[in-house]
Length: 166
Image (cartoon, rainbow, N blue to C red; front, side):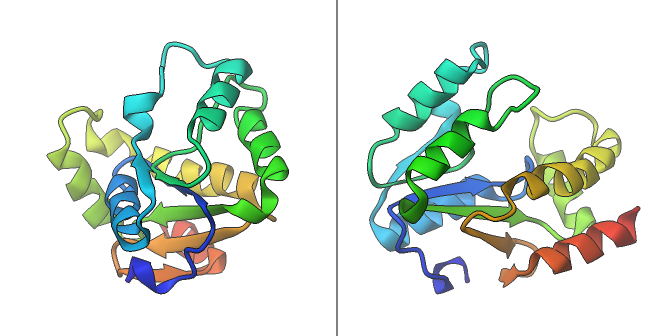
């Protein structure tokens, strides 16, 4: 279960590709820990994506919270503001990467959401997220949770699964 890990860090960022179960995981952690849940979608302006906006968003989250995404800005380094925030709050931040290591189950979740593009076009996004985005958090205080199995997994488990899809 997701509550089985050490969730004592006051700032918990739940991340993952769309349809992985981020919001469900964040709400469960919020309930289990008593921390305030901060909805990323409700508090983020997708029209403003500069570093200043990402920094303001991160500061506005407060001292103790669980949120269901990581603030990003424009390339070339979309996670610059978060990396800077992370480095300034090193001891207080946990990243929980939520994945779904069952692509059929993940696609079924997406089919139930009306706001996503056709599922057949998204397999490449699933693979790219795990190959490109996850390594950007290497070296950070991070746990990986597979919503398909309901258990914590290693980064190696994720890489093996993605390799089997390629």
